[in-house]
Structure formats: C-alpha cells, structure tokens
Length: 413
Ligand code: FES
Ligand SMILES: [Fe+2]
Image (cartoon, helix red, strand yellow):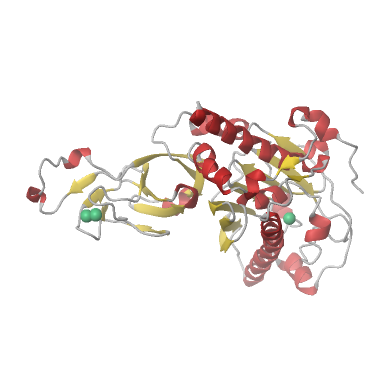
C-alpha cells in the first residue's frame, strides 16, 4: 500500500553507513557509565511542563536517575524559574525529597535535619544556631544550582550551571517549528503511566522512530492504526527527519481497513476531540514541523528530543515519554498524556479509552525492549542488522557513539 522505494534513506543520509551496528552500547555497563557523563551530563533534559509550576511558590522535585541526583525546580515571587540540586549544604540531606510537587506560600524550603532554610532560588536564608558554627557565611552557601530554561512550555535542566550550549542551540532546527501546538488552553493533562523496567532505554527510543514493527508488535491492540498482521507500515523518505542529535518521524493512518471494536466505535463516535477523526482537531492548524511531508492520511509524529524524551504528537493528543536509565539494563519509563479537556461524560469516557489504548501500545513496545535487553545480555550477539526503514535507529546509535567515544578519547588523552 505504501511500499517504499529502495534505500532512499541511505541515499539521503549516506554518511551514517549501511553496515551492522555494534550491540556494545546496549549491553555494556562500562558504556552506560560513559553515557552518564558524555550524554546525560552534557545535554538539556526535559523534566516537566511549566504549568506544573505555574504560580510563584510552586515547585517540582524530579529524580534524574542517570545523574544519581534529585533536582528541584521552583518559581520565585517574580515569576522566574530556578533549578537546584536537592541537597543541603549543611550535611547533605535532601531538602525536598522524592518526586513530588507543591507550593511554598512562605517562599522557603526547610531542611528536616537541622532546620536550615532556603529561598525559592536555593540560597540559604536562615541557619538556626548560627553562632555555633565557625566562619560560616550563609550568603555564600546554597543548594547547588543548575541551568534551567523552557521551550514551548517544557522545562529543561542542564547538569552544568552554565552549559556550553544554550537550550536554543541544543534544540537547533526544532526550536521554531512547533509554535502554538502545545497550547495549554487546548490540551490538558489526561493521565499518565510510570513503570520501572529491565531494559536499556535506547530500545524504547528505537521502536518509536521506525514503523516496520507496527504490523507485528501491535497487532494485538485495537487502536485502529495497524490492522493487518504481517503487513509492514513503511515510512517514505520525507517522513523521517534526522537533525544533528534529534530525530522525528511522521506516520500515516492504519495500513488496512478493518471493523472497529464496539467500545472503540463508541469512543470515536461520541468522543469529541480525543480522536483524530473529529473535525475540531482536523481543522486546527498544525505548525510547520508537524507532518512535514503534509500526508493527507497523517496519523501522528514522533519527535525524539535527544537523549531521552519522546513526544508523540497527533491532532487529537500529545504524549510525553521520558526514559530515565539508572543502569545499562534498568530504566524508569514515564508517560504523560495530554488531550483536550472533556466537555461531557461521553468525551470523558473516550479519554479513558484513549489512555488505555495508548497504554497498550506502549506496553507492547516496552515488552519488546525488555525482551531485546534480556536476549542480548549474554553478549552472544556482537552486532545487529538495520534496514533502510530503520535509519533513525542507526542515527540514534551514531549520535550516542560519537559523544561517548569523544568523551573516552578525551579522558585517555
Ligand atoms: S543537613 Fe540540612 S540542616 Fe543539616
Ligand atoms: Fe511501537
């Protein structure tokens, strides 16, 4: 139905090569330790939406597994965002704790251990029993700062307080392409899923930027995207966009007609803007970076913001999938889904239908990612094979490899 012409992506992205790809980056614990430094401590990482910290005093706490760190983002009374490590400069206790969010109306955080008090910018504002210390200058002490910036309502942090690359440079061509799409007045948070998995984080990224697996992996679910088992869903060359570090694909609607499941038919019929078939979402203008090849039967885009964020974008919903690796074979998966807020009970039911449909698709991909992690863990397979349809996967491995090898070479030099 949409069979590709042969090897067009290799012709377009010839410098990525055509040979097998080493499995070292998904099986080696030493490689993962290098990734912590070369990739995760040198990239901007997306940790939430600005609406999560909308008002002065609001804060968000986020565990960043590849850093072994917990980060606090808070909005001060002037409306400015600050990011700092959640660690007390007295004796190192967490000041805020595990993943959570809230509001500090008083504008301060207090460490539970000995009561040091911090402003919303992480600076020390009070030290109880200060006279007991020797040459302590609280003005010089703070929770260690991080760089923080925002793009289209997403909050990004960087390990370095003053990164070599600002967020605009890091995002490059992506920066201006999505204006207006992530409108908090149109999309509201509908739900989310978090799971700790025995997988290398890259396997989930990989299956999100190729569609070759869809007619096999996803045959069990009833999302209506991929109806015919064993029939590959191909992406034409204009549907794969490789940036310097980031990448995106556009996917067409399903590859075959089929009968809708009864619940699905009801959700589509009454579900309002939670389905791509509703005119209210079809008529909403899309920004230039979405559906770049302007497919008539466009279903969704997947944007992979290097190194660990996927944004699934359709007319009817978007989902932000974050992958937080703590080891070569351990990853926390966090998916947050945004849809137009329901205006009646039928739309509310349809939202739940949309959530579980998406959950099923994600579980099918996670199942493959765990399976690949387990099957490759023996080290018996030194290389994997990639087709032209998997050029974005090849790109992903190449980008990480470039950074890891440069880091390791610098350490040896
Ligand atoms: S460790 Fe925070 S006040 Fe002592
Ligand atoms: Fe998939």
